[in-house]
Length: 117
Picture 1: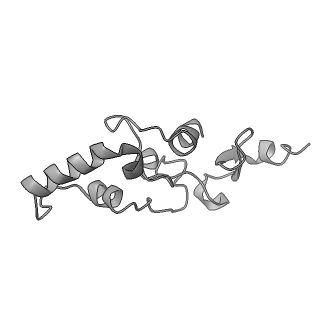
Picture 2 (picture 1 turned 45 degrees about the horizontal axis):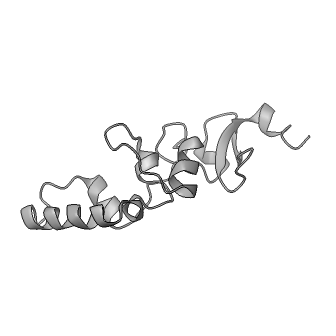
């Protein structure tokens, strides 16, 4: 959840060498946080690889502001931030985070059920 708050709320940029797919393909477009640097990089990519032969699939997702694919357990595999319970692993629920309620986290069922007490 900390990464999601940094990326979305504070418009931070992930370290692309260390970032997981969910940080690069979060609901907050990485492309938008890069500003002019994105335009420079995209111009270089267009100049040296106009057909996109050497561009990884991740480049196309970022450049078109697409989010990752959601599937069962994707939050636990660090490919997504959960939007529904199925994105979490077994015995976990997707619930609003404790402080920043607009962001969701996977929480064990036993804790998720007692959060409102």
